[in-house]
Image (cartoon, rainbow, N blue to C red):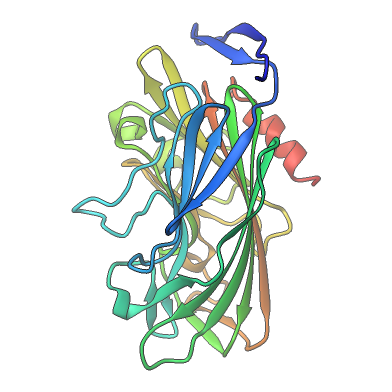
Length: 300
């Protein structure tokens, strides 16, 4: 049995954190159309790739201390928001984001666990973008790396390679690429905070602004939990402008601000390589040292 040594952090917000010093063992198990990931003895997340879903996604994405998800699933008003996910609307007339499987789906072909049981879980997947009676526009391959840098945080690295199987046109759309729908209790509308790398806060100050990262967090009882999303500097359009909402949504969304003002055009055979990092953390952006974490990430 792994021996855990603990220390206490008193944050500048006055919140006590109990954090294990030793690295947690991370385990993944494939069960049906899910890969479930456990950090230490706590369930963290599932990579869901069911054939009746629009696209693969992560849910829940549990906070390190509360054990409750910092993200939320679909609701009546926004049934196309699935926790932590990747997709795109308006691809060659198809819809790989909003509800309706016949409008387009991102289909997982080969989700598998390639490493688990130590301090890292690695998941790979190959996905085809498909809709009835149409040429598949995109094939993507994914590498997902899950770690626990310390007892107060969890980390998901996502590397996605998108290959254009035909000429692709994406008219201006606010629904594109990697996105997060936060849990309602952490939203700005319920007292939470959304802040970018430049210190601008909430939807009014962050919408449409380019920034390398965004953090979204709120209070849960006697603690604070949240999720930060990084874009890697090697990504096309870096730093992309962000589509943000006070009700709990954030996404670096270049397709809403296309360079020609009307559409994004990608030639057949071209490739987009995209990298993102998700940090699920305890405390606010200063407690979690989000700026310092991004400085390290950009050099990786």
